[in-house]
Amino acid sequence: MKNERLKKEAQAKIDQANTFAHKWWKLRLVAKKMRESAAEMKDEMVDVRREDTPIKNFEIPFQENVWGDILKLNRVWVVIDNELVMKDVDKVLRKDTHMLLSAPNWMWKTTFLEKLAKNEAEGCEIAEWVNIWYYRQDFSNLDFENTVYDELRKYWPGLTEQDFRKQAARFQLDWEVMKSLVWDISEGQKWLVAFCALVFQKPWLLILDEPTNHINFRHLPIIAEALTEFKWPMILVSHVNEFVWQIRIDDYLDLDKL
Image 1 (cartoon, rainbow, N blue to C red):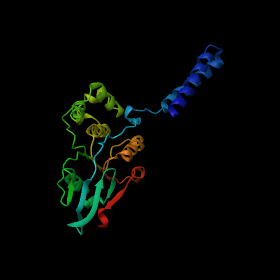
Image 2 (cartoon, rainbow, N blue to C red; image 1 turned 90 degrees about the horizontal axis):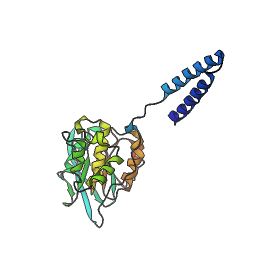
Image 3 (cartoon, helix red, strand yellow; image 1 turned 120 degrees about the vertical axis):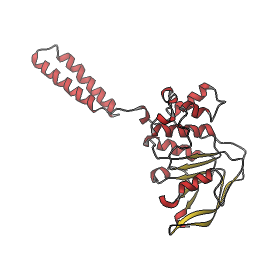
Image 4 (tube, rainbow, N blue to C red; image 1 turned 180 degrees about the horizontal axis):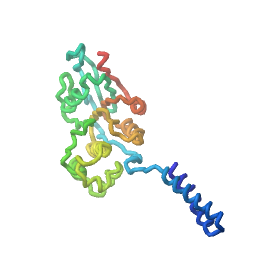
């Protein structure tokens, strides 16, 4: 908005300066000052990069006609006095259940989520048929040696090229980005790749470990809306309250209070 205002004001001054420049010498001095003022306005304009613009609204696809317990949490490891201790819990995630997992940074949350995503967490049981998508804050579940195109294509190989490109474009992944190696793109672009892959993956259980890291703040309400509308179980870890408050949360598990 500021850019548009400055652009209009600068152009108006330039138009006036062009008119005065053909008049007598005093008006030529005015014209010179107007051009200088217009140049200063252009210098104040903010350079808006493509990745600074909000992504388009999107939905996370889900499977219909499935019911029952998706994830059961009976026991979890917590840290008490610098020692790992197993604690009993009673949490069941079914369809359309969103749980916020809270704990201090030293509580091994990421380790727990890694084991959970592999269905190897002791005291936790995930239905065998469940398709899990685990968002890692370090993007290590992406193959950095792949091009962005190949990395996304492996999640939905049967999609037509037109629909594939259209879906990627919703996440600002144009051809310049798509032909780049995942290793070479920015952290913000890796985030876009990870969430685009999430949509292609059609998960039945979504595990998110600090998904706001590297995120453009303009994307926050769009991501929050998509997660709120997600119809399958979700486990969210986030220390950004402004983000969490925008998402529908149905259950809580605070490891520090067990």
